[in-house]
Structure formats: structure tokens, C-alpha cells
Image (cartoon, rainbow over all chains, first blue to last red; front, side, top):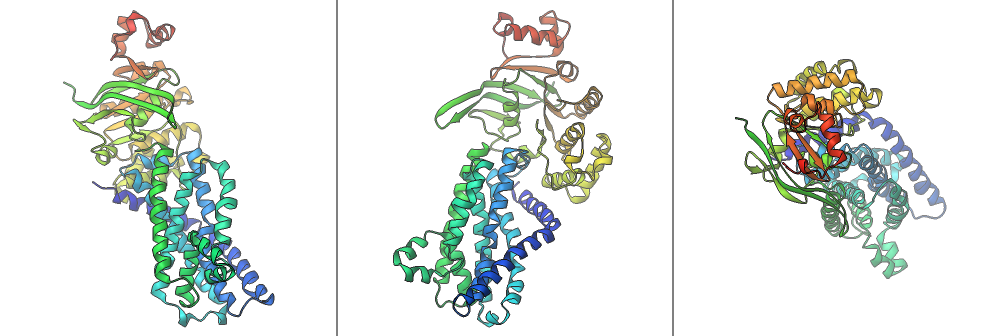
Length: 258
Length: 257
């Protein structure tokens, strides 16, 4: 007897819930995405941003959608842990608790992938001529996209483990998400940070978001001007493993489960 | 002769805040549980009843001690053991994203039932628990009594061998309580082992084959309701319980398990 049948059933259950609220969520996501792309991709060019900046920005916006969504996911989970505790029903099922936590991370990654996948055609439509699809390495983009979303899933899990309760959720955006996002290359490349100051560039390397942005842009816009693709990939896996292991430990302590 | 189902040996549970001990919830609980019996777990608030049943449901680990299932530690056979346990918690931990009917099916599937089997089982249980009109309702749309019925039905979806009911009738009106008594009696008839924690002593007396009284994390009395009444020369279990509460350290209560 192993945990896998329950693991897959739980993922299936989450996908059913996701399917039901898909369009509502997609409309919210599309509004955020379109607003950002129009403001940064078009109006910023009027302020003197370089040519091709719109495509540069679109790829970063697609990459970071799952990251912004983390706040909601962590919030729902913290509310559950402090309230109804439906997770306790899952924790008495024939599945090891570590597998419950791994399922949560993967499930969050899958829903994030399914949602942000649709941003690719939308992004292309918005910056039509500026983004040359011939420059995309599709297989690199696919594995980086999956890896980035796995990182978001396990990062959310880690935050769920380290934040004590819903009150701490107020700090989540200000202390974690906003700085990591804004200093993670959302509107600039790592090379720009390095050119500004090598110290800033090197400090940026401790932020996992920089690898998400650089990896996605290297795959979607070409390697020139970005951190090496495989280095970004390797670093993201280091963060995924670290987040998942530490989250597992913290959640087992927090929920006092086997 | 009754078959031993579960052996609880010297189980302790201590809650810590860092290294500081907050509470010793269980202090060396030893108890045998036989197949097909209904064990009533009694005790005042904070006695350790819920802590014990949550450990037996494998939700929380004990600090020390062992629990043997058919001679094997439940932690060495965790998944097989979990697959034969049905746990009805004190607080309704029910997903709001699904209707009650869908929740039953999803829960059954997680315990290895096929979709068809889970649908069939859902219909059976919905009939037994009068949940049929509410299968399409969300948990927020039903009363406390139906939430409780749903929780018990969910615990029974996978036909468990051990059912743990943590205060299943709390807050229910007497009519629904009596209906649930019928359900618990029918579980016993089916040979299912039941652990029932309750504050209603009439309920414990009527339903339990044996009573286990826990006080300050220790088992103080384990016996049949009839023997307890006879031994203490009382007419009801409630009177025995009140006598104990009045003087838990009296010589007569020091027999232990």
C-alpha cells in the first residue's frame, strides 16, 4: 500500500474545484495582466524605455503571475488551518503527511500553470509585432515555465509553514512578495542591476525571482543579455528542494501530525 | 472470546512551547480495545479524550508509548491502519467547495473506492442518515444536526473496521441524538469497533459495552456500565460519574484500568 492513489485523487479534487472557478479567475488575471502590459509595455516606452521593452515586459509578467497568486493560496490555507481545518480530514487518509504537503505544492503549481498558460496568446496579441515567436526556444520555455510554477507552489507551501496565522498574512505582501517581485527583475534585467552596481547585481542573486525572470526571458527572447539558462534552472531547483523540505518540517510541527 | 483489536500501551502526550511544557495531556494511557465493542470514553473537559482519539485516528503522534493493531505498531502499518479507520471529529472540517454528496464521493475515492462504488455507498449512507434532500447542498446551507450526520456518514464511506466518534451528538436535539444512537447500535451489530467520546452519560450508558473514564490524562476506570453501577451502588452511570467528580482520589476509584 502506498500514498500515490490518494495523492492523485487529491490533485483531481483540486482540479475539479479549479475548473469550476476558472473563468472568474481568468477574468481577474487577464485584467491584472492587460493593465500591467499596457502601462509598462506601452506607456513606459513613451517615457523612453528601449525598443522591444514591451516583449521583455510581457514575458516577465507571464512568468510572475503565479507568484502574485501566492498571497491568495497561502491566505486560504492559513484560514483553513486556523478555522475549519479541512486539512485534518486529508491528514487521516491513507497517505503519508509529507505526501499531503507535496501534493499541495504540486497542485498549486498545476493550477498556476493552467491559468498562466493562457497569458501567452494574450501577451502575444497585446504586443503583436514586438514579440518575435521565431526567437523562442519552446522546449526551454516549457521546462522553465513548469519549473517556475513548481517553485511558486513550494514557495507558497513554505510561507504557509512559516507564517503563524492570518494576522501574519498582512505582512506577506509587504515583507515577501512585493520586494521579491520588484527586485526580482520584473521590470529590469539582471544585467541592468549589475550595470547599475555589481554589488546590487550580486545581492540580487539571492532572490529566486531573478532566476524565474531571467530563465523565462532567456528561453522566450534569446539567451543574449540574460543569466545563463541552465544556471537559472539549477538555482530554481535548489530553491524548490529547500522550500519543500523546510515546509514539510515546519508544517509537521505546526499541525503536529505524523 | 472477544478478539483484541487495539492495544494502547503507556501512551503519553505532552504539549511544548519550545522546551517549556505547556500541558501533559495524556500521562501513560493503557487500554485494550476489542473487536466489535463500543467503548465509551468519558471525562470532564480537558481530561484528554479528544487528544487520545486524535492519536488513535493517527492525526497526531503520541509523545511516547505504543499502539498495536493486530500485534503490529500502527506506525509501522500506518497506511493500512488508516484505511480501516473512520474518524468523525468534534468540529465539522468539511470542504466548502463541494456539495455534501460530492464530498462523500471524493472522500470515498480517496479511500480507494471507484467512482461507481463511491456513488453507491453515498446513496446507501444518504438513505441511512436522511441526507438525501441535502446531497446537493453546501455545508453552509445545512443545520448542525445534518452537519453531524454528514460527518458520521463520511467516516463510514469506506466501511471502516474502527469508527472514532468524537462527541458526535453535542448540540443536537434529543430526536436527532436518538437517531444517531440507532446508527451507533447498528455499527456494533455489524461488528464494527466504535470509540465514542461524549459528555452525555445517558448516551454512554445506553450505547457502550465498556466505559473508560479518563481524568487528568490518566485512565481511572474501565468497566461495563452495569458493573460500575453495581460496584458503586448507584442507579445510573451519571451518579457514578458525579461521585467520581466529587472525589476523584477516593480509594474506590484507584483500581485503574
